[in-house]
Length: 413
Ligand code: HGY
Ligand code: MN
Ligand code: MN
Image (cartoon, rainbow, N blue to C red; front, side, top):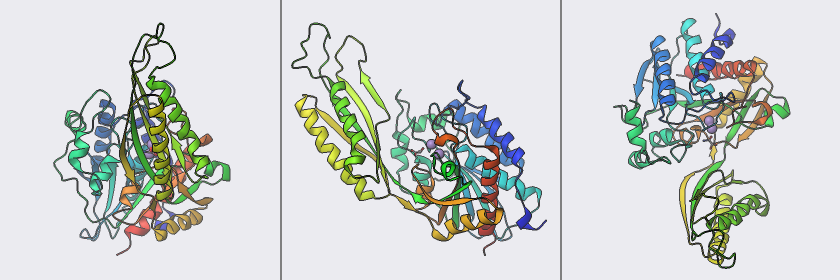
C-alpha cells in the first residue's frame, strides 16, 4: 500500500483507550491514575506488555520514563519521538495524556502490520508525572530528561501524606537503570486533546498550536492564631483562612488588572485545623499563572506578592511564599507546525493554528529538539474532569494526522 493511503485502525485505538480507561476508573466516568500509584503501575505494566507485543525495545529510565524504540533502515540516526503521559488528575478524564500514548502506539501498530520501513527509528514515550497533581510540580519526568529539573530534587518531592517520589517510584517497580538524561532526538510530536473550547467552537478537527504558554507555580503559607470560635471576639482575630480568602480574590481579579493575556488560578488549598468551631491558624494555597508573555506573568506575580504582604500584615498572619516551578513559554518549530496543518489538509480534516493554554511535556521537549503538537476537540471544552470527552472519530483523525506527520519526519535522512 502506498504510504499516503495508510490509515490507523480507529477501532483498535478505541479498544486500547477503553482498556486503559478501566484502570483507575471513577464512578463519574473518569479516571484516577495519580503518578506512581498502583493504578499508574497497572497502566505502565499494560503499556510495556503492548510494546513487547510489537517487539519494540523497551527502556525504563531512573525517573520511570518508559521508551519503546522501533528500529529503521538507518539506526544510527536520531529517532523521531512521540508520546505523552498516562498519569491523571485526581478526578481526571479518560483522554488527557493517554490519548497521546495510545495514539502513538496505534501509529506503530499500523506501521508494523503494513511492514513500513522508515529511514529513522521511531521512539514512543510515556513521561512520568506530567500532571503534578500528587507530586508537584508538573512534567517532572520530561523536565529531568531534558535537563531542566534536577533528578535528586525530583526524587525528594513529597505528596500530601509525605510519601517521597523516589520511594514511590521504587515501590511500583519503575525506577529504571537507564540514566534519565537527554540523547539526540530528531523531532518530537505530542498528540493531545485540546482541553479547551476553541476547536469545537470553530468546528475544526485538528489543532496545531504555535506553542504553549508559560506556566508559573507558587505556594503560599499563612500563619494565624487558632482559638475557640465562640468566646473569641471578632476584633483582633488572626484568622488565616480570611487572609487567604482576600488573597484568593486578588488572584482572580489579576488578569483583568493586567489587561488580559494572562490566566491566574488558585486550585488547591489546605486549611488547618479545619474544624468548624476553631479559628483557622494555618493555610496553604497554590497559585498558577500562565501567559504567552513570560515577563507579563512575572510582573503579575510581583503585584500579587505586594498585595499579599499588605493583607498578611493587616490581619496579623505572617506569610511565606515559595516560587515552586516555572517553565517558559514554548514557541514550537514552525516547519513541524506547518507539516501538521498540511497533513490535516491532505487528509481532509478542517484545522486551526492556535496556542496551548495547557502545559505538556512538549514544553520541555521543545527546549531540546524541534517539537510540535496535534490537538483534537474536547467536547464542551471540558478537561481535568470526569466528563472529559472526545469523539472516537476525532481521536482517529488525530491519530491519522500523527501517523503521517511522524512518517514524513521518519523518512527524512
Ligand atoms: O497544568 C497543566 O496544564 C497540565 O495538565 N500539567
Ligand atoms: Mn495532559
Ligand atoms: Mn492534564
